[in-house]
Image (tube, rainbow, N blue to C red; front, side, top):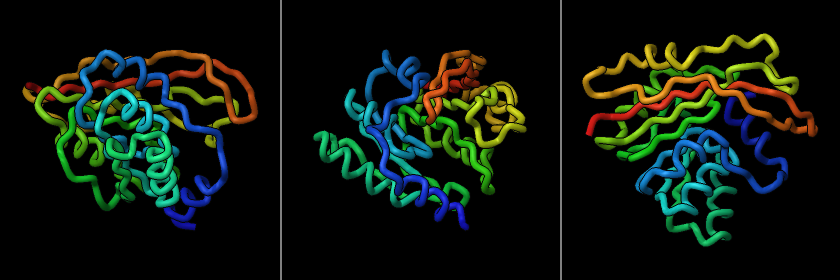
Length: 201
């Protein structure tokens, strides 16, 4: 099964209305709305939350099923003019444009993905003064599919991007704990690795 087939199958399953990621709402709540790119948008909880607060969002995912459903959901909510969903296999193509915010939440996959290159492209796609928000898993939850996972620290992720320190600055690099609920209703303490990079104005 290819990565596209896997994720199309995953998002073909009916699910509840998507919710935004906690770290996105914490970091972005006080920012002035502009243009945003949601990398690996999935069911679109982050995209819809941003659009509902005035952002113009390009949402990208490898799954055409996910992007089609997100487009339909945005139209149902009256957000169609603020949401443009595109199918991209980030290993091969990257959404064009310049953005005030690029969000990449849990961009983990068991399929081949040149993550550092993708996130470097994201940093270069920022407008002056724009921010790149990267949130990764920092711990194994009881319901995680990979119980042997190794987690890269936010500082390690920042170093892997090899960005010019004169043009991009790390604003935050933290490991943050929160209570999370799994798909079966299980509750556990998990860690999010948060990296926030800002391009010089």
